[in-house]
Every structure is written in structure tokens, then in C-alpha cells.
Image (cartoon, rainbow, N blue to C red; front, side, top):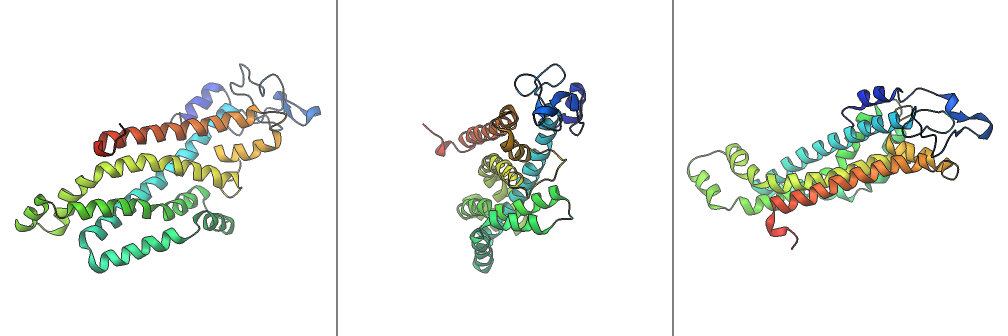
Length: 268
């Protein structure tokens, strides 16, 4: 749905920024005309109060923004955390001590407060790019700790010792022997990270420091819907349901992958 957002909104006949004043009642504070928030053949999920913007178009484009931030931030977290965790676990000594202290330092920051402060101060930058970078900045230590522990157990395996004896260098051992061994837990952990990233983006947008209007975002729509929950509850229900179902789907996917890739930790 997110990938096909422009096509779907065109199919619905409305762009996410198009106003339809005929779909709201100006004498009732811009309340959508018709039942269930103005759901009709013209507006499949109803319209926004006051503005009359098509809610279906804004939901599908909001999915694009929310998932873009979540997936890109997750990629940054996984790549950074995997590299740091393998380096710390394999080389040990001062490298491990330095990276471990950096993990502790990053995890000790109150990340949500720091994100809000950063997003509030940086006003004239690309919000999507900044949110991706800031969310990614605080997420990598968790992955790094998982990978470090896995690497510590892998580096003493017989096939790694055989690679040392055979004259293989550190880079070859890391990429051909250690990395495949940590790939399974990392893949499972990645799918469990994505729901948290989606929720973080939604929370920042809900608090008013995320994506700026008129760019649609699920968190932004949920925040705006609070003022209309008693007169137009569908404006709150629809983006909230999309957020809930997406987070639930990625959580179930992560649980399933964890059971497949790590049978010893699977549920009985």
C-alpha cells in the first residue's frame, strides 16, 4: 500500500493535499457531511474535519512516510550495530572496552527527550532525514550487544580456529565465518525493531516535533484527531487502526522469524 500510494490515491480520485469544502458542513465547525466521518463513494474512508481532505489519500501517503522513516532508521541501526558488535566481540581488548563504553553512553541518554530537543531546535532541515538520523542514532547499541554476545561464542568455534591456522585474515574470517553465524538472530531482531521505529516516528509526530504539515503522517493525523474525537471519531479510528495493524504485523513476523531461525529459543 505504501509503495503504491500515488497510484491508490489517484484511483480514489483525490490527492492528499486537495481540499473538498463540499464534504464538510461550515455551520457545524467543519464536521464531515454524512455518516462515519463522511465515508462515501467519493471519499472511501471519509474526510478530514474542517479541511475536507480525503482521508484515504492521506492514510496511504502517511504509510509511505511512516514506513520510509522506520525502515531507513532500522537499516542504519542494524548496519551500525552489527559492525560495532562484531568488532567488539571478535577483536576484544581495548576495542571491546571502547565500543562497550560507547554503547553504555548512548543507552544512558534519555533518548525521547533528546529526540524532542533535537527536532525542536532544527527547524529548517529536512524533517524526514533528521528523524531517520536521530532515531537511528539511539537504536544501534541494542543490536550491537546481541551481535557482540553471538560473536564471542562464534570466534572460539573449530571452523574459525581452522581459518586462523589456514592463514585467513581477520576481514575474511569476519565476513565468511562470523557474519553468517550472526545473520539469523540479526534478521529476527530487525523485524522486531521495525514496530518500535514506527511507533517512535508516530510518537514524535504526535508530539508535534515530527513530520511537518501538509506532509501526511499517521502520528500527525492521530494528534490532529484528538480535537475531533467526540464529533468525528472515525478521524481517530482509521489512522490508529492502520498504525496498530502495521505494528502487529511486523511483531508477528518477527516472532515467526525468531522461531524459524533460532529453534532453541522458540516457544513450545
